[in-house]
Length: 269
Image (cartoon, rainbow, N blue to C red):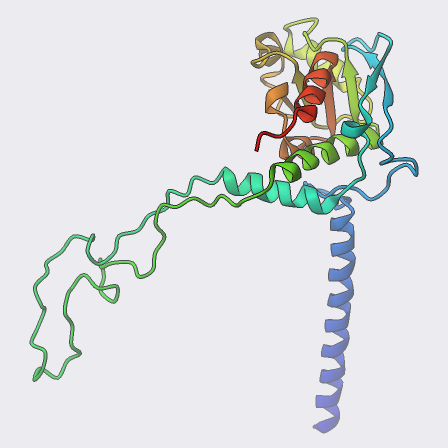
């Protein structure tokens, strides 16, 4: 009996150790952004050795037809900052908390419908004493310590928000996932043709297209509206979470200049 118990204990320990190893390897793959079949917003660790030196970057300018349109210079203090996963994490947390509605609401004992009469005498009945049938212990009664409408927003300094956007843009440049177009005006309004043109972009699975217009380009939205892996944003709406949700970022030259102007503007305190 004792030998059987020892064998079972040894088997349980080996199984627990195997699970710990599996969990550790899963965590490492998750943090490196390489978990197969699952979306992740982790910033990858592998970048060129000269990344993060705040030097201006020259990139090739093309269009949807992959025609050579020259070169564009990207500001080093925006598109070549050191990669900071901790800053990206803080900004994403701030964004997701800020977008929560916070409208969940339950009724307390003074709000739920029902009589206010005492259900029975305080003493002498042999039953538990109660002061109201609207208490949380009764069916149809109040919810104790339930949620009330509130803001889930958390504070984050403007400098950190701005740095998070720079890090996200720099990571796309370092990975070669930033494509610069002279214009994002679609050459056709046919969705099938746009699907073919976007498929020709190297390594593109999910693409975010950013234009320099004040509002979203209507023609581009119409041409890509039925493509679930294509999203369009104006330059003023570009944010960290949207960049991390797409593996490829397509920006017009005008959008890049707007982003640089936005990130070079002194913070209004």
